[in-house]
Length: 121
Image: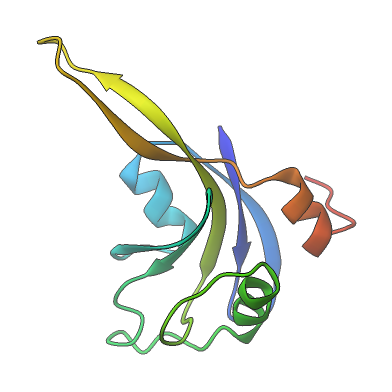
């Protein structure tokens, strides 16, 4: 299992497990909805793409953390925000076709320690 740092709109932080490559598992990190990825090098913030339409609450804590980590994006952060990392993975299909894709993996422990120094996972 991988892990993500989830920042709730009320400012609470939690480490949540997810299964890499499993869409339902990734959606559960942000309490459902369509996924939108905000990349920052190999790191990624995952948000609900329909946050504005669904009138999800503002997430000022996530905004501050993403600013501190050097993320760049347009708009506002609404609803839960999950921080994770990505890596390139080669996929081989049964017919022998190969391609590479970026898959979501655990957030760096340093990020968790930076924002949750008393992390008791």
